Picture 1 (cartoon, one colour):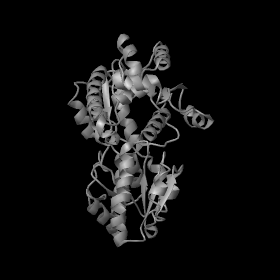
Picture 2: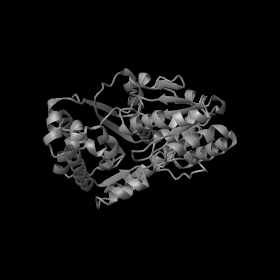
Picture 3: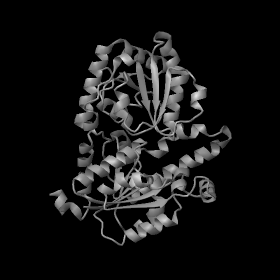
Picture 4: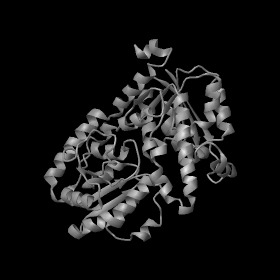
Amino acid sequence: MRILWIVPYLPWPMTSGGKTRQYHLLRTLSERGHRITLLVQSKTEADAAVREALEPMLERLIVVPRRPLKHPMTLLGGLFAPWPLLTTVNGLSTPLSDQFAELLTQPWDVIQVEHSYSLQPLLKTLQEQARDFILTEHNLESSLGGATYDRFPAWAGPFVRYDQWRCRQWERKVFAAARHVIAVTQADAQAMGQLTSTPVSVVVNGVDSRSFAEVTNDPHSLRLLFVGNYEYAPNLDAVQWLLDDIFPRVWLQRPDARLAIVGYGLPEEWRSRWPDERVEWLGFVPDLTVLQRRCAGFVAALRHGGGSKLKVLEAMAAGLPLVSTAQGASGLAIRADHHYLRGESTEALADAIVRLLDQPVLARQLADAAREYARNFHDWAVAGNELEQIYCTLPPHQEHPACA
């Protein structure tokens, strides 16, 4: 099929869960013979390394620059436009609208838009031309307010409530406009289904099982791993919880335990805020498997967010024993005490970490069960199959050779 795929960021390097999902779905579909044009609005340029990674699996890569975050149009739109703040940041882009309109003069089997907040520059043209499109929503954005808005000052409360209202109204509008909506978990699909009569299906988050199959953890390292993109508020909250509350309790029982903090956008001030030498500030790591081999386990101390967490799936696929909240394990059909150790409070998570370090046989049993689950139910091939099944429901493509 000829696919026009629109995303509001470059999917390389894979510095976030969203980028990882984009890259591997594009790779999977390309390997199956689909011909993909990728239209990107990006705050960063597509340099030679980006093009080398992406262009071999695409027919065409088109990158439209995104205006600066503090541009006057963004600030004014955030205050007065009918769209939520995140949509305004990624919207009001005439260059993107013009490029999209030009692309719509060509025949496409599938038009796929990633994230409702990226749709504003495209929606008018889609509706004027009565073009069907698929919308993928990685999280139900209106439900993420607790993690996003708690960093606003108290006096901004009226704006916060107004923006949450705008977000819910925008979701209803764009879900209704889409031919099909894709969620990444069943829970999100059910919540989205409450807002629209448009069909909602699940395309799971996945993991490249082959890349992690040979990884073996090091229980003697006593090192726990946390991975995140620190431009995303739930990950900021998780690190603060780990270092303000959870690990001080762990260290009372296991003073030799260590914590490695990994991921893109690591705030520099954290090193001075938490100067303990048992905390390793590693930032973005290009090959995570090297570090996973040096860790005893993975801790997903997440209190906010949505969808399913690619960092958790990658840890499971690599055979790292997992300690997690229910939020960290959301969207995954895994069971506490069979696939992972669960804790919801500071005390419970600290105790679970100590238990993982003290009981290596239990840790190995949990890790083996989790690796098998990730391989069987969340390989990217599974996600690719689910996505192709949705494509084949789109009229008039039920009879397309790819659907035979």
